[in-house]
Image (cartoon, rainbow, N blue to C red; front, side, top):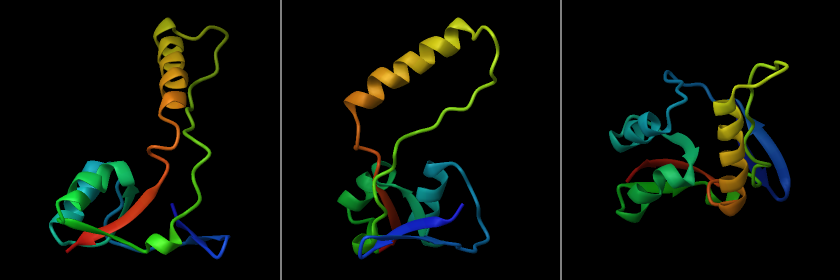
Length: 111
């Protein structure tokens, strides 16, 4: 997926090439902590390490606009499992309470 940036109110998508592609934010943060490269993660994942000075945010003036939220994809069936319905209800209730806390993204690298 491209990295999204916002410059002077215009949103840009940057295709970034690298030798590591992952969908595990903890793994990406550890990559940055080990000095292996620059990573693009939600601020909440990098915040503890930014607070201790282990990581530094990059390109803060180019932060992307807030996300419209999360998307949940699941098989459409006439009847959804009760556990799936409970999970969806949990997300709806809890994401509304925490709206905006995980919407910002940081590119971070080891200091």
